[in-house]
Length: 190
Image 1 (cartoon, rainbow, N blue to C red):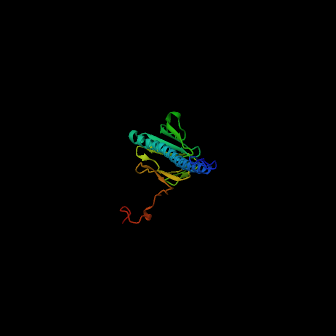
Image 2: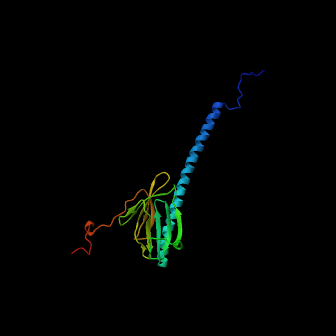
Image 3: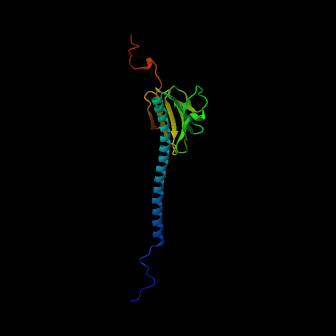
């Protein structure tokens, strides 16, 4: 029996099958790449914010242990921070020998604004978180954006020295007068 020349070879792929296979493979690669990129961005944000939190914790813990004063200066314009030990009464100038460590924020972790618990806030001027043997002189919050423009708030609590990061923008509690309390306090009750 003679085989007809018009009969296609059954073992090969057609061009259409090859294109469909490559398209599906490209789709899987694109989805995997997107997931990996998202993880890398999240990791960079977490790494930068953790470095900064470690700097704040170093300041408050060192102050509690040694009785010395420390200051973390956050510059929202330059997107930098530094930790120094305060050695002079001149708080306006930082001496090179006072600097313990410094760091930068980047595209993955951008400072938007800083609000202190006394109501002062800044988006342009360097903010100073000072720590002494009793803890933070002022608490507050630092609002950050990640690469996807998601908002995170770092809270510095002056009452218990706690530092935490929360997703979203959190409103600081402002001090209330005795008349705003829902119950009478013993010192005010007559």
